[in-house]
Length: 232
View 1 (cartoon, one colour):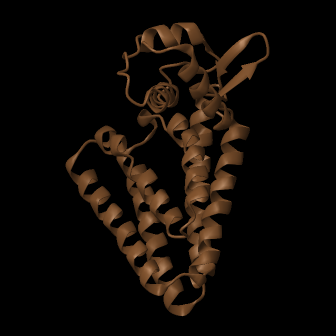
View 2 (tube, rainbow, N blue to C red; view 1 turned 180 degrees about the vertical axis):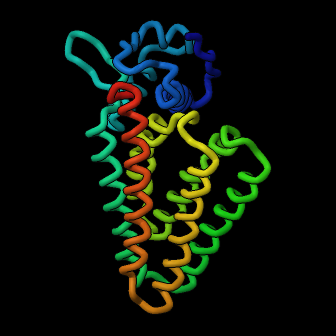
C-alpha cells in the first residue's frame, strides 16, 4: 500500500493522522507488522515522527509492540468490543448524572445541537445511499455532542479514542437502511427523554434509552465480528 508523502509542516500530527486513518479503515490489516523504516520512507519523514505516532496509537489500543519483534496492528475481538461498549455506556450514564448540576441554558443548547445533528442525518438518509450516509458518520457526531454536554475535555478525548472500535467494526455492507433508521429513531428517543428528564428531574427513562441503544449496537457489532471469524 502506498502512503502520501507529507509536507514539512506539523509532521508529527500529520504522520499520526495518516497512520491512524489507514488502520481504522483496515488498509493495514489485523496483525500486520508495521515497519518504521518503510513507513518513514513512504511518508517522506524521518523515523522519529513515525515512532511517536505508533506510540500514540498504542495508547489508543490500535497497535501493539512486541519487544525485539516489532509493532503490529491490533486485531479487534469480541471481548474488546464488549469492553469498549460497556465503557461507552459508563461514560454516557456519567453524563446523565452530570445533567442536574449543569446550567439549564447549557443543557437546552446541547439538546438543540443534538437535534440539529439528527435532523441533518434524517435529511441525508432520504437523499443519499446508505454508504454515502455512513461516510459522514452522524452516529459519531451525535454521541460526541452528547458527551460534550458534560463539559469535560478528558472524557471527550477518551470517548473519541474508544470509538476507533466502532469504526473498525462498522463494515458498511452490514447496515441496511432499516437498521440505520432504527438507530436514528433511538437517537431521537434519547433527545426526547433528555428533554423530559430535565423538565421532571427524573433521569431513569433517559438512562434506559441510552442502555437500549448501546445494547442494540453491541449485539449488531458482535454479529459482524462473528461473521468475520471473531475478529476484524
